[in-house]
Picture 1 (tube, rainbow, N blue to C red):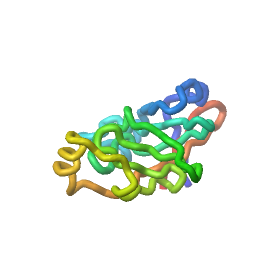
Picture 2 (cartoon, helix red, strand yellow):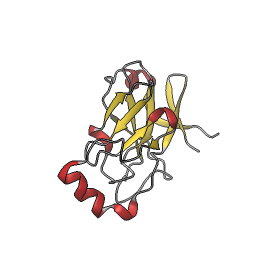
Picture 3 (spheres, rainbow, N blue to C red):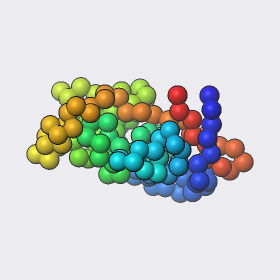
Length: 143
């Protein structure tokens, strides 16, 4: 497993609010995409029970940045991330597994439009990453 330093300290990350998505620019070439993610950003969110998750900055279903995504805890204790735009839902405890549409919230008018426009790009699961720390520096690893 390779770890890559990213330009933010562990202290800065710990100051982010619970249930609020924070984008971290990594500048890693393997994460950069000129159209949807030019700075190789990843997203983080901390749940109410202080678990920090790191995942792709854009929703795999609609390609919209997940900056306004919400996290909810379901009855079995799993944390679910819901895209604010298309309402695609991902189980963060199960490595970003996309939930079936029958379980996810209804997408609404704009969400349905986004789903039809980006339907060929739907990839399924939300890419998840690991965060680590060394001497106060934040490290990122992905498979």
